[in-house]
Length: 137
Image (tube, rainbow, N blue to C red; front, top):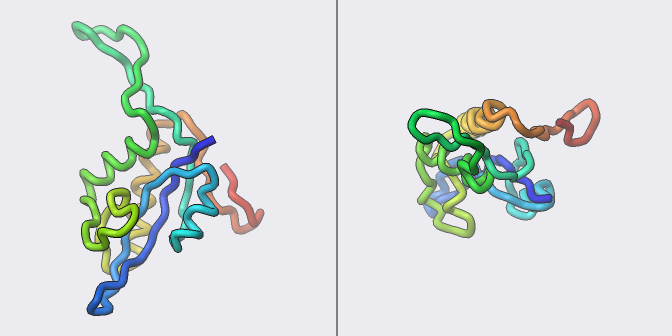
């Protein structure tokens, strides 16, 4: 199963200025993927298609696919809000949104993006549970 993950990361410029960003990506093993990219995983959810309703003449005709995956949906919405992080231009830069001065700003943006998954309401969202020491829905 493929998952869409939301993580935060940091960039260091040539002038040694640090900025933070949100990374939206997909992986079969999001923990392993974000660890290898040196990102802090915030949450992940199944990367299934986003369904909508096909309408014709103001009437609902039936279900249709609005977005081919959760990742595409979140990237589209997040890029509209925060813009693409074009500073790094490294691997995966098109999946990085925002250019924040402080880590808590990136974390707040990640929470807003995760809230979009809640609004869809059709899938479980996995977050780290410090009491259980595991990812729980």
